[in-house]
Image 1 (cartoon, rainbow, N blue to C red):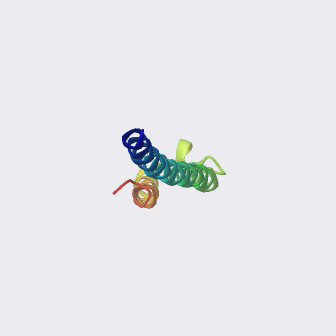
Image 2 (cartoon, helix red, strand yellow):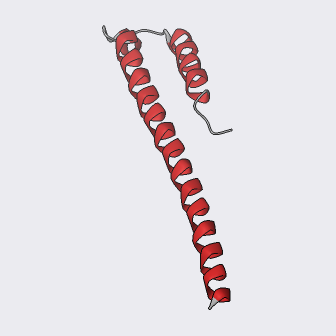
Length: 82
């Protein structure tokens, strides 16, 4: 009976730490997803602001547009998992 109590105590304690670590990881991933979503929305807003007159569709300003897209990509790179 004592052996069973010891085994159960060890299993419950181990389970507690495993579950706690999984919850912490889940919270970090939720934060990561939230940041990704915010970054995507900010990029979308920026791209719409850049082309509010439709000048990229009509003109040959592709070089400028490409540089702006690179800046946006650099901002998104900050949110990658390390």
